[in-house]
Image (cartoon, rainbow, N blue to C red; front, side):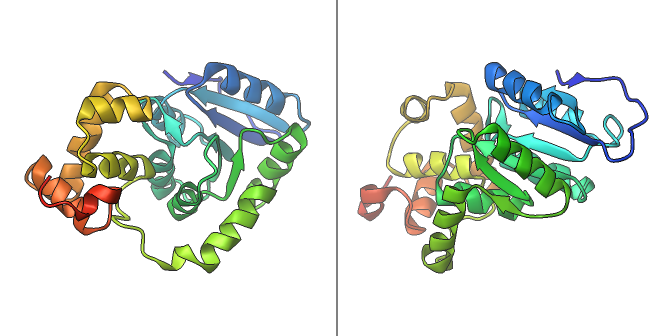
Amino acid sequence: MAELEPEAETPQGLLRVAVVDDHPVFRMGMAGLLASLPGIEVAGQAASAAAAHELLDAGRTPDLDVVLMDVDLGDGSGIEVTRDVLRSRPGLAVLVITMHEDDDSVVAALRAGARGYLVKSAGPAEVERAVRAVANGEVILGPDVAARTLRYLSGTALTAVPFPELTLREREVLDLVAQGLDNASVARRLVLADKTVRNTVATITAKLSVRDRSALIVRAREAGLGGAAAGASGP
């Protein structure tokens, strides 16, 4: 369940921030850091995608300004949550903060509407600057992420990402399925629960409108997923 604070009148100039992360030590530490900063109030915390949807509902936190959003939540994708929430709250500033530094994660977050992207190794001053910047309408990336993103946009980003309707995690799962791995093997490779992989494969199958796993593998390989397995005949 989302941890909600009682609603109160927000002082003028006060930034209200929520933290969404499934790692309790990091989430509580980040909330503590933000609460110690002048002019910033922590409006709530969420440890899962479901709890994030509850917390970020406009009726529960109407004066919320900024959300710090992890990419990988236990029951879903933070990027997907970002996309869903911003459909109803386009003025909300989402700052993605995660362990992932890969180019696809950055681009997927920005496409979902996030205004910023930091890695979890960022220092307190960098986090504070990023929170205040996105609240002010700016788009901000950490120094390393910005440099890599510029290189990406000048080169490989010109190549269409296969199945843009899928989240980053869904494409990771699909790539491994296209390599011929079963659900248990995919779960071990990505350190996920078997049920999570099974549900993700079902979601991918529905999104791509294919009839079964074999057709899904063929479709993925035709799009270039599956690595060396993509050139093989049959699933």
